[in-house]
Amino acid sequence: MTSKQIQNHRYLNALREGDRVVIEEIYRELSTPVSNFILANKGSREDAKDVFQETIMALILKLANEDLDLSGDFNAYFLAICRYKWLDRLKNRKHLETKKSMEDWVTKLEVSLDLDEMELQSLLRQEMEYQLYTEKLNELPNHCKEILSLSLKLNEENKKSHSLKEVAQILGKTYPYIRKAKSNCLKKLKANIKADARFHDLNK
Image (cartoon, rainbow, N blue to C red; front, side, top):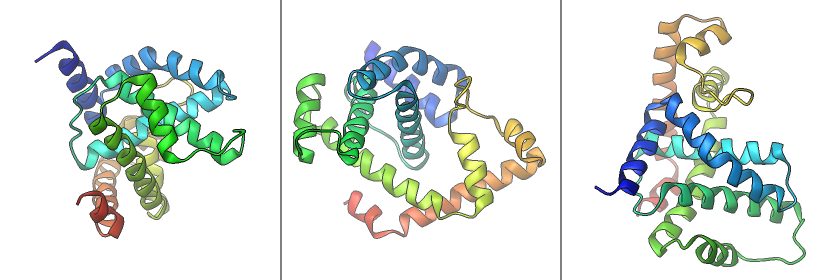
């Protein structure tokens, strides 16, 4: 196994298992290039923080449902997702002087990050999956949305994810209740995702 593969496995496993120490390492390593790109393209530090957190959430949600077979470099893949998300936001905000198609964004990413075709396809699939997961998360009961949002996302102030004990304290519930509720909510989220026709389209 190469050093790149070892790092990929370490980072993906940390996201899958909620390893806060390694997730913080990802933040320290990649927050500056993400921020630099967004600041250079009509964004703010708050925008950079939002995009970084959104990308972390997208990967956590994906890994909660399936494995990610990443042949290239994790850092390049992560930055590609962040860049794609920010360019898409700019397009939606109508800040770009000219309209560009999805193929234009893919071409730009391919040239700047040297991603191969499989990784580019995975990137586009990742974005569609994130949109589906977010939609289904928002359809869950309020208590599920609270528990999953708190336990999966990074804390904006100190960049640490919330443990289940911390979630219990925040919501004023017992640890066993939160642990069981999170498990049930994740099962419901996965079932809702798999029941959607778009899930089957993505897994053809």
